[in-house]
Image (cartoon, rainbow, N blue to C red):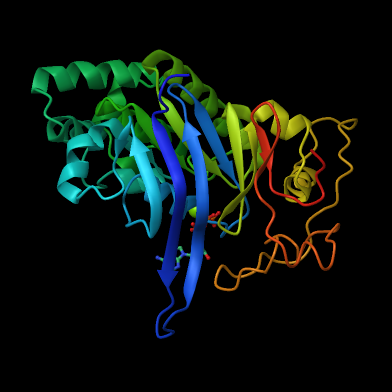
Length: 319
Ligand SMILES: Nc1ncnc2c1ncn2[C@@H]1O[C@H](COP(=O)(O)OP(=O)(O)OP(=O)(O)O)[C@@H](O)[C@H]1O
Ligand SMILES: [Mg+2]
């Protein structure tokens, strides 16, 4: 297999707790995965499990506490801001709120032009690229003369995607990119992202707390719980043969598509514990319906190979 575009190796991000020396919020706690070129990886988990922090580390928007990060075979873990600026055009981001991507006082055309010019494109190159992208995202060129407040959330999110693509990136990180939109608009945008991936050979990490969204778009899925990966595999492996009780519980909470679509897993109960005091042993043991006292609450389960690309961290799984 060729070199992955992104490689995350034992990555940790601990935030110091104000006024409490030696205490940390372990937002990302030893995460390892790779993203192959042209692949879409979904990262899913409940609120507070560290998805956005993982994404901010990936984009080098915050310092990494420990572990390594590689982009296109290059170790970028300790890249300075200046070194990152040199590769920033290759790594772009789409956020949940598309309004945050645009200056409210500027027309969309000006905002997109500024981005293209920032990355060194001539005015002619930029105009051609912007025209092509607006067509690609299915909008009329007239939107370029509009300001953000004159557009719908769905239109603006399409334009935020175009904005990310103006730079000509190889990698896109989408953090809850469709979470604020209606379900029908969500589906259109997800399909559009899949088409754009194919057209521009993009590689993506797609973060969402919604399993249905991740299932639709991802080739591989990573399930995070309290800062750690508890299960990962191809979308098929994850959704048709979930192994970890946490993944099963997330699936049980997923809305059923048809009345016959029965899922008999147990629903999650209780709140996710604080990332400041992660439970001993298996971090899911305090909420796991199958927790084995004396084992699950004392021994940390390794992320073990199950079959194919499928891995899970649970003492109950026989391999
Ligand atoms: N700058 C920060 N300082 C201290 N703690 C932080 C900081 N950023 C995030 N955290 C904590 O890190 C943990 C993970 O947060 P993060 O935002 O990464 O979760 P998430 O999975 O993206 O959640 P959501 O689905 O709500 O977006 C949380 O406990 C959060 O409170
Ligand atoms: Mg988040």
